Image 1 (cartoon, rainbow, N blue to C red):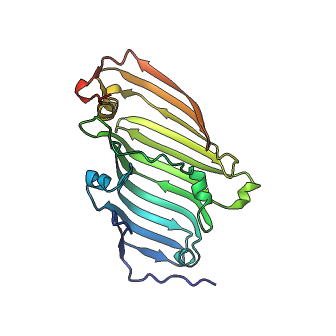
Image 2 (tube, rainbow, N blue to C red):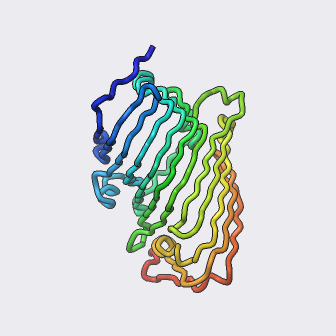
Image 3 (tube, rainbow, N blue to C red):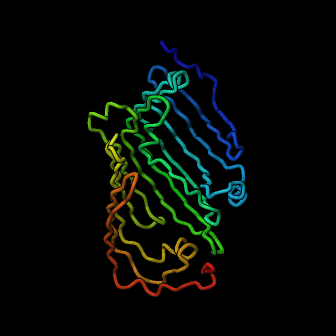
Length: 280
């Protein structure tokens, strides 16, 4: 029998990653053995170097992630079981707010190695893995990249994020019984347009196939300029995207899909910033 972990008096925890690239800090740690609820007021993931210095310390393109995740609750969870066996069994995880800032320097070499799809990452977890659901009630994601030939970073934002994931598991029961990993997410693209996506993947499907469907509501084209100007080297001065719908099917070998785009008038003019065009 596994005894419960005594964390009374433990209010915060901090550590530095083995490669010294990140510092991690958790504050407001609490646990109720009666309710089997583990809570953290905030989890801070802080890079130890600024954007470009962080990138310079890697041979290949690498995402630099700066995050503050608040009001985290693990329900039906025993820290003692996890620490003693490595099994990650959780009823649900609820996150009140997630603020993420991601940067990638695309002027660095790209590492052309085969990476596992997300299903394989679940299946290869070294212990038992079963999380019924993960919910995010709010938050903002900013993604920035510096493209070759650009004079500055391009940026895109996803605001007022609300997301739910279901069935994160490597339980081999689903080799015989149908079960699905699912993701439902909504956000405001560039703080202006409603974006919704639905991802669905049958667990232990032979080729790790999944479908991704999404839609975007009306958006003025100019709202995309912070990304377009420094990545595609164009920017829009007028025009509106009334709606966008896409449907993608992919597996560990290929991806296919279709997209429908409804535009009012003509997005014109798209002016090329010649000073920023990368050299041939």
